Amino acid sequence: MGRRLKLRNGQIFCDAFYENREKVVREQIGKHLDGIKKNISQLYSLCLSRLMNAQPQKELTLDEFLSLESGQRQGILSAVLYNDALWRLEAAYLMLCIGMLNVAYSNLRSCLEILVDAHIIENLDSEAIKFLKGEEIEPTKISSFILEEYNTNIAQMKKTLGNWGVHSSLSSVQLGIFCGPNTFDKLVAQTNTKRIQTVHQSFADAAKTCIQAINDVWLIFFYLISKGTKYRRV
Image (cartoon, helix red, strand yellow):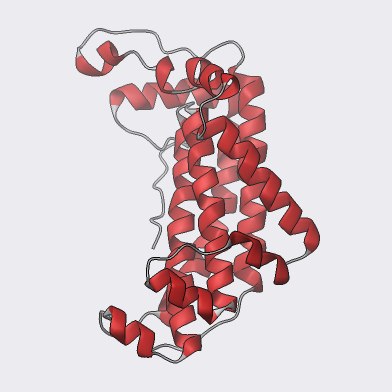
């Protein structure tokens, strides 16, 4: 289950370097970070409920998974995937807290892909079996189980997030330079040299786009997990 983050005056990180980094970011977008954290916390109980309702009483082998009643099999696998998606969403939030926007986008893209797989699996046992056998799930199959508007939004969001945080392109490289790992001086982490933490002058505007992306993925997450079917415990 995704862990609950312990806040200290709103701060997430306690390591000296990252703590100072987060302070600088919070000066720019602090209230938005707190709002995102509040939204994500609403997903904890939903994911935990799925796990508690579907989790088997023992570790299952592949053959045992395949021998389960379809609803039980789907319930276990979708619960695990929703929980994995929650970790990816939380990771995106943590990266935003220290200004690593392209890494946040990468996690958001992974979160969306896993959410799609989770929802397909809980609706199609044939896809659950494919997942167990290591075969790829066809993402377009989700269109039969959600509103057309959501399906269109998911497809567009995956493309955009991939361009910003996964695929190499001018926009992703520039984002990495100004608001990504390239903003971290390795010497700061490896020595006791004190440096003043700053963010690029364009950070606040770039962060607004990332904040909106996280909120959009959260809406998709909440919609899909709330829409799903509950299964019996094995």
